[in-house]
Length: 115
Length: 111
Image 1 (tube, rainbow over the protein chains, first blue to last red):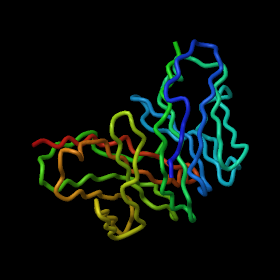
Image 2 (cartoon, each protein chain N blue to C red; image 1 turned 60 degrees about the vertical axis):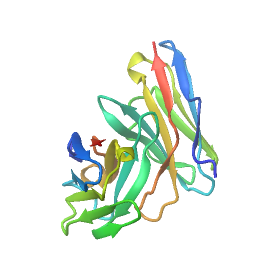
Image 3 (cartoon, each protein chain N blue to C red; image 1 turned 180 degrees about the vertical axis):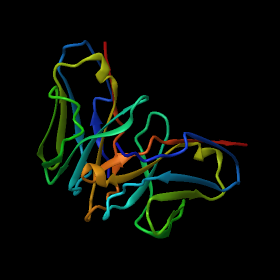
Image 4 (cartoon, chains in turn yellow, green; image 1 turned 90 degrees about the vertical axis):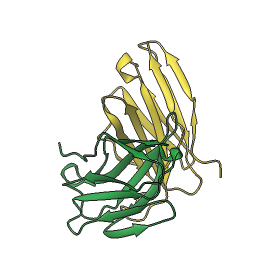
């Protein structure tokens, strides 16, 4: 298995531009998670899906952030408009979960820089 | 907000046993405790998971007391390649079971 695939690996954009991050989870996994990692705040859960349905989006910072999962093999995290404080590494993870037993497999991350 | 708390950093030498403790006072009742390892420029990697008492796999052991308000990751006989950041992950009952990562423990293994 190729593992969780994220694209792009690096993204540099200017403030105000729209940014779309992409994730392909491991085939057969029924949970998908989006995280953000910064030095100041560490690893933060932004949103997670179960069977393509958003379950908890309480970690999404504000309305500029949105996430979708149109099918079991693809998810996007969109930031519009982007701001310099959005600069971070964004990770996608997937898991095959029973109850609250999450063994998550993380992708390599997308390093976002907003200038 | 309740937090999961870990030591910021630890130093060790090759061949020693390393124990990293995470405090999670508000762990959700049904949640498992999971530990991850992260190397620079990589995503976190699953190490071990448990609900109570002791769990052991080929790379680590996890000790969880009866009240489940803390957990200890034990790495036997560390090597230089174990130098990484280690995170605990639990659900916080005060936040509706939201998954919360600890701030991470940076382990440095010296020869």
